[in-house]
Image (tube, rainbow, N blue to C red; front, side, top):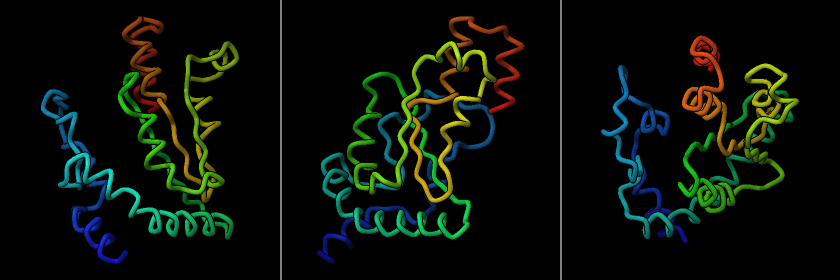
Length: 169
């Protein structure tokens, strides 16, 4: 088993994930970003499928430490925001990667169109209600980013309201 673990970690880049996923400063050119990219992993899809289950023990240990820290008064939590069009792979990401975690420490929220009650509240109210508590891993299937995008594209809010929402995000 140790051999397999070494192979799985060998493909990971040495840079922190936050650096691998961060956009460069300045204007963003979405066309220049590889939609099929996999920052920090140099293998193909088959290699990724084989490597993912090998991460389960490490993920379980890290999740347990996060949870224990939250129970001892720590405030750390993790929020994974999956934003993409229908059939873009959000569900597969949850099944294959988040499925390796203990479900008792995971809170999955799928944001749909706001309900009438949510519309009466502030723009980010429903988002704030679902932010993970200490020691928890939260997953947002879609998010407040889509609310701004749809509001702008379908002209559901005035341009000044959309600008205020950008500032809030």
